[in-house]
Image (cartoon, rainbow, N blue to C red; front, side):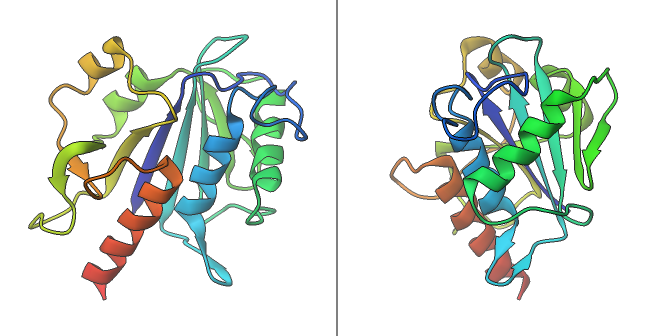
Length: 189
């Protein structure tokens, strides 16, 4: 099982954002939607062995985590609006500290990065990390940030984590996921 977790520093924590304005009213929800799509989509198929966690830290709070499970997800199309609608639906239902399903394969709960890191060990995608093309082995779980760098308190949480790079230049998160997926696919074939 491959897992990707993306921290959305400004991402809305309620379903009140507009699907017509994912960057503005959603707190750059468009960045997270593209990460979801890069995690799952193949040409004419979905990756069933992937989970994608979106850690939402924006307004109005508190922190929430939305989980997409490839083996169960339905109604996901390869456009930002589709994944945005599934996130919006998840954020519109009451949730507690345990994941609650909003639509098939999409879950939501209260809690953020600190809790997620106690449950799943993630390697960090970082430009200064070990190159994924030359690393002898690659882990299955990866954490990355949205268009902002990790905050100091987040860096403290991930201080001991392995770090991997997809290349010498900084890429958008969704592009980094695609490159990483390709490298793992090549190793597995």
